[in-house]
Image (cartoon, rainbow, N blue to C red):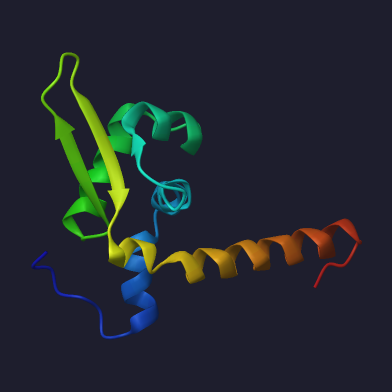
Length: 111
């Protein structure tokens, strides 16, 4: 990972997880290691190409590891690294904010 990171820490975080699929991948891997097919089902309506590109990007950024087993058919598993796991509080805060927002909207509050 030799890319220059932004000076602003918020921008740095966003540069790593700004894609909606990346956040959902992290959410699903917080529960433990998953195979590619499991991730594709749990993440939602994502194409194989887009999921693969996001997983590769996240591996390059040090957020997850990819383990390939020499089997037929090949088995590939993805696991969050310690750095990836350290995003748990960020996702927890997003969860809490989303819940609060949904409650306010359900109660008719607009602002």
